[in-house]
Image 1 (cartoon, rainbow, N blue to C red):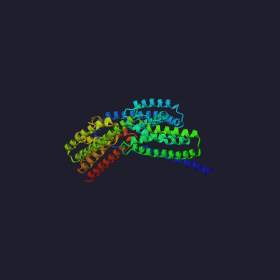
Image 2 (image 1 turned 45 degrees about the horizontal axis):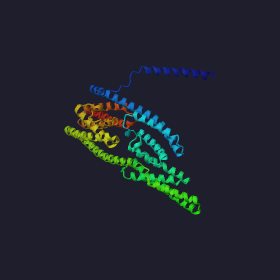
Image 3 (image 1 turned 135 degrees about the vertical axis):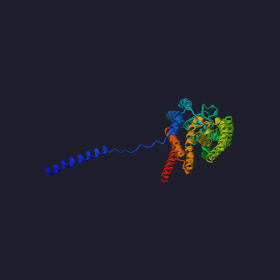
Image 4 (image 1 turned 90 degrees about the vertical axis):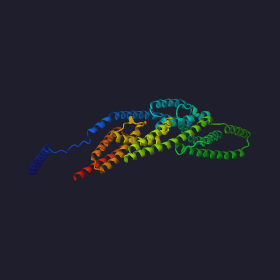
Length: 461
């Protein structure tokens, strides 16, 4: 036992000595990995400092926008809960408390509208809340007045919001009709059928194109069909019941009901003058939308042609085409300012293409990065970031051409452009811009690979 113990003690001493020897060897090891070589020249540092103030301003703008969205989310959650409560009370026939909820929601939404800096048409979160609120207001108005809420009575919301809320309100009626059918309340069902038939007649005059309003409008005919089937089933049951029951009181009630039905069918349950205005507006809007799409295609085409001319070293042709694109874009902006919802989509994409061409021309002329405030056309942050991201792809193509001529210095300058753009976009980029940031990162890696290959070739002779 003593011999085993002494062996263990000797082993521990040897193990401790070996650890100390290894630690001393590591401490005395003087070779460390080299730090990465900076890709920035004096030119690169100047380029970076020239963008710093502009990017700081954009960062502050994005942070403010995110803070506004956070406030919008909190308030929207509260409004959404209250709308759910209002809809529950309306569906269960307890409408006395709904007035107070509607007024409270109206005040909260008005405060939210004042809080946002962008047009309501471009803020989908706020528009969704407005549509849901209007749906509850319409159902409340229907139970109190037996008609559709006029657009002229709204305190906020666009015509598109009103139409969308109307078509959502329509989907509430089948549930209500089934409840009234259980009570054999044919008059209330007739009111619903008359209102929906008149609404359908007006909406048929609007060309909704393909979109969410078109899909919701398609659902209206199925609601009307459902109500007509319920009316048919009730008429069959009541006919059998009246045949078996010859009570005079019942006969008198049937006559009175028919008289009420005639009144309901002959009166207008939707605001005709409001819908005449809506139909006229939607017709004009549709024509302006088609015009914006057509002009946006022209802007995009001229901007692409400008970029192609730059790759062919025809700078004058590139500038001429971009000037033409700017003239058309300014004409389009006059329409978009009247209908802010038309900014997104085709026109925004064409402005992004314009921004890319303007950045490329400025690079050729001045060898720097055009700042957002220096464009001739007003770009949003999303459009500017999209243009910057695509610009790295264009100078990447230029780098390939220069690499075939073994012009490594210009390729290294392009690498500095990509690095600076990547750095600043990574500071700006939140979830909305991750895709654009990945594109810049891909283009950056391609330039690094080109420089590596040129370096290997130069050393290989």
